[in-house]
Image (cartoon, rainbow, N blue to C red):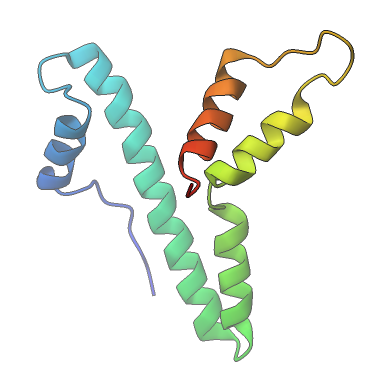
Length: 114
């Protein structure tokens, strides 16, 4: 079974351009399209490899799931990001957080019920 790498359909390219409001800014559009197209191609290849792996071995479905999870990990949740920001912060006298760390912690707290 072969899985040729083909360019994304034109409708998908237009969607990508609309998402970033880049239809009129070609230099930025080229960079964005190259990035998104590379990710799309990599995702297609990963899925083809996982399908191939699952077809070749009876117990490979779990392995394919593990490969997918390892190669496309989910980004940390807001709660995990806030905890990491607190852990990364200096704890000594006069300790401070960066504005990015404060923003993450604020957004996490705003999601809590009163």
